[in-house]
Image (cartoon, rainbow, N blue to C red; front, side):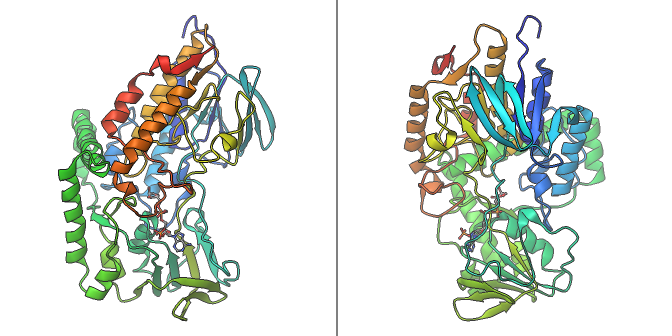
Length: 485
Ligand code: NA7
């Protein structure tokens, strides 16, 4: 980076996105980069989610950094600990930990005299030229608002706060929620516990996803032939992005119809008892909630020691969960598989921009940015996973790399020297959000269901267009849409 201004940069979060940002920044010649990570270790969602059965539901050869293909994935969809190991190996290979400050939660970032003043839980960290937020989306556990939640006498915890070392063998376990997490737990836990009660508020559509091991010969072939590994990546990307995601946003009606049929057939052919099948049949469109991919949920829930409870939960008591029919479901352990507050993003950190307003002020009626990466009034503030990022059944790593590739171009512009502040024009952001509002009603997310895509104001937080459009938009900043000083 000869002739360029050396910038002091802060990245917030040492999950998959933050690690990638550090690698790419160093590669681009930026040496003064610090990652602030509130936990004591890296890995983000793959560090936090250690529940039985945790896997990625994007096939692994499609869920990896573009610059670190991995021939070693053991299964079609790798287990969580394998993904965590992958991230740790990448961190080791690129010597990332020397730039990570663990146990440092960023409490505030204030735009002051043309730089970001950062403060963490251990005090002021000084001024930075730019900030990259890589704080994740599925990050803040959502605890259900159920009366008596603190009165339970057994163990009770959220899936992202799993009680390590607790044996569930022979216990009576109740799981609240039926999202991807609960579905994976069900497949893994039913065989080992004495009784398994799954408390379902809403049925979920499920598509089958074969989850077999990847044979040794296949791995050996991928090791020897990086071109085949790349071809596999492209095949999965095409399936996920061009077909599946396009189907969900209404851009590929034939693929959508096929998907609906696959889900219906899977339910029909997998669940024998018509009463149970009726309980498991959703009343909303396939894909309105994030589609679940599983190969063992239906089988597990029909196991003799498993029970699907659809009566409304009335309260939690010392000995278990009381449902509206008056029945007490006696339990030893309650697991809250109740998802995440996906709209909190980088908060509770206080980010105070150019005109003294905080992100909380600016986002009082919903999170809004420009192309999901920047926010007007917040110069040199770059988000990975900002509002309206492609979320859902995509490879998050691919989304993150695209967004950071875009942010990097803006950061490089700052490094060139004659510009020290870059922020999107308000008009550009307004236009983008207007386009979002126009496009969203055409997507399946707007067809009438509750989901973690929708915030409390009714805004849908996802990217309403194809992944190809996202990649095109991220390929080069529209420089006219930015104010530079
Ligand atoms: P999700 O997909 O948000 O699922 C949460 C589940 O918890 C869902 O079934 C909710 O029912 C249920 N829930 C939430 N609050 C309550 C209360 N108060 N009572 C009963 N049931 C409740 O979270 P996951 O962790 O499974 O998955 C999140 C993402 O992680 C997933 O999509 C992947 O991207 C990985 P509801 O449907 O709202 O009626």
